Image (cartoon, rainbow over all chains, first blue to last red; front, side, top):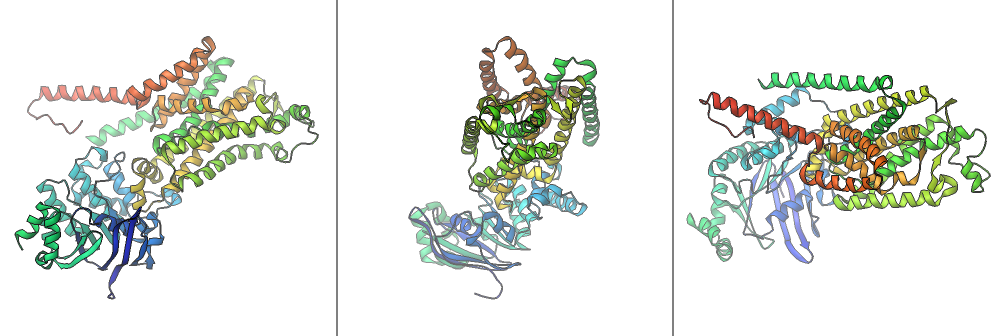
Length: 262
Length: 367
């Protein structure tokens, strides 16, 4: 554990009715790092993110978050408290608020006091409006800001959600398959947005698309059957025999992708 | 072009509100006694409908127990009126039940201010308590709705059973005076009507403020995706509790006004059927729009008065049928229907324009 560590998960175990989705998994994140979490289906990647953001409570282990407000074991906190501490989560399916306009989605996502009294008295300050407008510009939805978010296309919804995450200003951002179901063009744009996100904060990305992962020179953690299999750079991971075996045994297409440049 | 299209609409809306308020305030000049009383009742129900809409239309929580909150407000006011009308004697029903002394919790209701405050605080407090145990434990949807029905049954049973303290099945009635004036006089009736109009306007403004504020946006966000709001850092349960309490408080206000117009409150008026009728007011008017709730309440209460007088047995069937028709064919209620029609007209107009200057390719973006 080094001094700039922002999140340290120690021997985390998550079980569902006896089935251990994640087992003795340890994960160390340095501040400002971009980490990819890969592995075959059912490896426990998403569950690991769930354990960090409080969606599931680990049966054993600890998740220590070294944030601005000191070190906190988040396994004892509720979801909204964890979010307020500075851990943001984006789920696989775009989950924007379909009944709100694009602009309203950004407005409530923006970092601010989240209590009932605060939102009752909140007024749109000039600086807030500027932040929202800048964000709309960045995600390219400026001309659709008054549109109900439910009417956006799949890719636009993903961008809106990424925009919401950016305004939320978490210290750690957990992204679950941000480019799943996107066209190539949409994937490229999402990649650009991701680069933007990564500049200012720590990010963990669960991803299946190996081509996409290769665009970023960063550390990769491979999970298999709930456990840590391998950690290192993309090249190291691809050369690893066990990793190849796991992908070969599980899913042919993924194996092809992994081995093609190995 | 867009902003110039929005501005006149806002002005039109303001004019509409002003005309409606003026028409309501001047109603005593052109309506007879019976009509004025009926309208007053409609407006009281409109206040319940506003609160229910805030809860159901905006927060996505369906309560089938608002009869209770309405009833609690009504009983608070009725207790005060009963005490004032009985003078120094014990209220008649207590006498019949063999009580010799006024129960301690009746004592403070001699004060109008106390009774009026309790008419809001008790329903809102009960809602807060129920909300605390349900929303914090993430009980929602159908399960929450069933619990509100249970609340109705418990409350009604309690009020019927404690006859010496509540007047039992007969409820509380037979009050004649308020602030020393006779309630039967024309001036008193006009005053009570005007107070109701003022209360409705205040309730409308309150709901409008809540809905337009960031608080209201969070409520809608919770309706669309409760879990998602959690991961944004909001605690949905505190927002749901707040909405539920405001909604119950408004029902209490409506109950207090209702007693003044009708002169009686009994457990039947807070039971299951009235509770469901209150939800219907919102469904038919158009949930998710405040104007819809008010329109629904006024139209339905009028219709109930007309139809249940001429066909008393038929009314409930009609109510049931109406509920089905609205849920299946008009999910947006009356306001939703008007909106759809308006969209159809503008779309047709746009298409015509596009056909005329066909240089511009037809876009699908507007739909």
